[in-house]
Image 1 (spheres, helix red, strand yellow):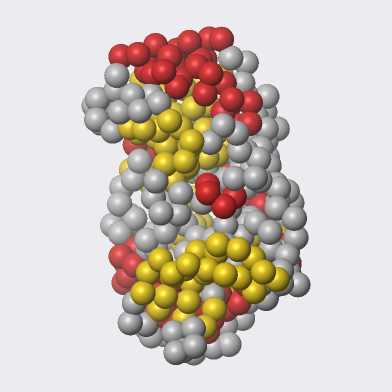
Image 2 (cartoon, helix red, strand yellow; image 1 turned 180 degrees about the vertical axis):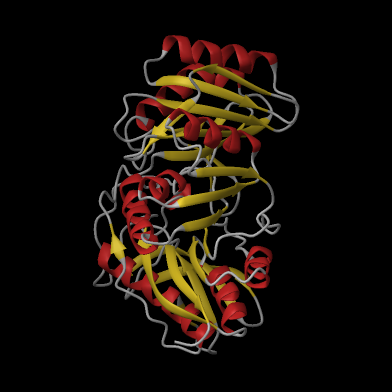
Amino acid sequence: MARAPDGRVAFVRGAGPGDVVRARLTQVRKRHLRAVVEARLIDGPARVPRFCPRVDVCGGCPWQGVDAQVQGAALQAHVQRALDQATGGPAPLLPLRAVAPHTAWRSTARLHWRDGRLGYHRAGGDLFDVPECPVLAPPLDALYAAARRRLLPALVGQGSLRLTGAPDAASGTLAAFPEGAAPPELARALAALVEAEPSCHGAALLDRFEARTFGDAVDLFGPERVPHPAGTFVQAHQPGAQALVAEVVDRLRGAPAVLELYAGSGGFTFPLAAAGLQVVAVESAPRAVEALRAAAAARGLADRVRALLGDAAHLPTDPPRVALVDPPRGGAAEAVAALHAAGVERLLYVACDPNTLARDVAWLVARGWRLEEGRCFDLFPHTGHVETWVDLRRGPS
């Protein structure tokens, strides 16, 4: 961010703190400007070497080239400002936690294809063909190379691929999401990929008509070896995600039961159950709920884990007094209102978007809740994204 001579904020893509640059305006608005760097004339004090030669055109890691501590401070300041405004501040935030690694950190990635090209969307929206990606952690680096060898001729039309693999595993899964009906050659190519490539132990073809699987289309994550069907949500930075889960579980330890909304395939569910809590887990994706139920039964936890298929805004009858929510970027406005109306007394809210988190926190604070404590986790190195948990209690302190 910079400030134009007339006082407007200027968002300058490719610049870092303290840089002096020559930039080209790409958008002029009444309150702000957007620009892209054409040349760096003087490097700022936070500049460090970049590890990817495609960073200027790819769009995936725009904060590369800025010192990691400066990145962390910017993330912390952003969340602090948002929560200060939501609570009347100062919001009680613990220091940000950054967990290594900062390169080769992704254990899941979504790539896009269009008529035989496969890669990421640039900042402007165009598809950039990516032959390799240095933020893919093993086994995803080998899985991506195998996918390009085996699948490119079958990637007609357009769609997306989800690559997933636990960092301690020798292989991973691939899920294909074509837009419209899947071409017949794609199913054959996925079957051949699983059969011939050691880096891929399972695949799924998920179009609007049906779901087909090949091989063992499940990945096991974390100390609890939580099963995630190919294509379902998984935190990308697994070492950081495990630190986040451990901290959240530790804060909830001692509660007799917890209502978990947006439960996914059980990233929080099974660690909570292992800590002795009764868990009522609500999730809207049928495949994830099936995986939750099967895993609970296989582990002898069916009496401790109750997995429900449903909308997070429609709570089960007589829910526990403690709740955990981990919503997508749009936040949990309807679920938060339902929890408040149901008389829930404590809410541990995990968020990937500070703005929707602040919106929901402000709504609760206006109704008598207080923010007890929170912390940011840098789970998306070299980007402006950040994961945050906040512990909210009903009533005055």
